[in-house]
Length: 202
Length: 385
Image 1: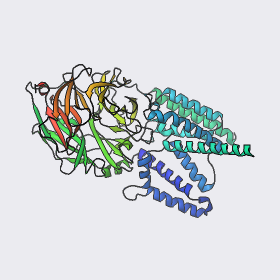
Image 2: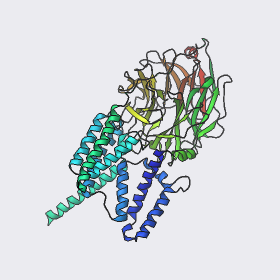
Image 3: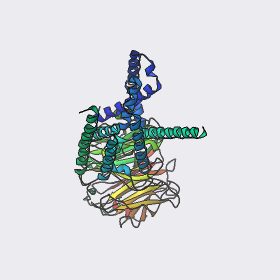
Image 4: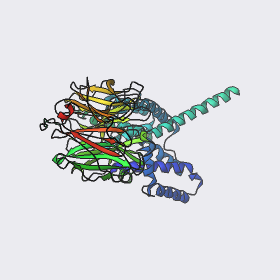
């Protein structure tokens, strides 16, 4: 198995584990039961049934997921398992805004809307790198260290050629995390709006 | 230093290092080379018109489609196509057969890739297989690209690459090409790969999810996509075929899927494929069907296409002596009234190869039940009908 395949399968497996950890109220279980549940989930995700393990079926649908998705999936697993949050609400909100902006810039054009193709910039563009550097410096200045860490991890994975892709975009963002960010932002806005309306009515 | 201090200055130092790495990688990328047109030196073709045709073997598949071929050692031709109980079925496999020009026969077909093998070797689920295309990279290896789908219809396609060091007898495991940020779906192939002077392989591809448009991928020697250029955009152009004439110049043709009039689309580049003109309609009809094209040894461009606006019952050949500006329909391969045809009158998805001996080969889907091989020389093209 190539390193790219191993990395891709591990990523999809981690996504599966995060889904299991989110569905089951692990914190209500005793510690031993939590270990047992996660071990069973890991076996279900990585042990082949039929021709392939569940992670490979998921990989068929999603492709290799970005480092950002891996980070959020890992953070979700740890939070459900230990109650410890790796990424604070301020960092999370900033990350979601960045992801939403990047997704709205990337996907419509990448799907053939115009002749301009921002995805092609991910193969090597000084402008793209400089924009990413400025965004990372802005995040650092705002003390959004989780965002900085995700960019560093994605860039390292890209430099190491960890995925099948040689495009930097694929290490930073994917449609799953983009949709997740948009849903979380919209739901946050809806809550804030309904709170203001309740205040005004009161 | 406090924990906060470590976090602050440590993250800045780490960011500085990785961005230095990104900039170094970026600034040391070699600039892309122009086209490396296929060697034009070929044996003189006999002056007497020559023509032959036969159906390729098919002992198992009820439905076959989308032939491709490449010349291999000894002047032989290796063809590929997909076949199964029906298009899109789980039992569809990629088949191959070898043509010997001396005996004018095709070897019995064998499967080079099945759905089961693809999903085992690609380490992900695969629901069906589709179009294969074949060619050589700059190292001379035979490359086979094929479409696979994990979810949904053809809009959910991705491309895979296998290489062979022994003219197609054995193959490497397939490698998935990543050509779209959107779950890497909706990238397909139909046109032959080409070579760039810098050693990269060019692969014309198209997308079918929401938009229908073409792109030209550049692959490095191991088969990673390292660059790409958009050939068109919007919702009406697909299946690009690129014909380079020099390091800088190439013309491309695309299937048209838009509003009438239905015409073959043409694009051009004069800077080695870095920039392409907007697609324009040619005078040749196109019933939303694949086309094939090749630069002949004498410098003319040959096009195989369905010469009708609405159906695939007529498969014809056209010649351009001015690199695509004007066309002359010279031959009809299929669709002559009164001539025996296939049970289902569909002649489609042509593929053209001119071999080192100067003979021209056209392979195409014959009635969806067989692949047909027509071979002729340049003199036959011009012979009065």
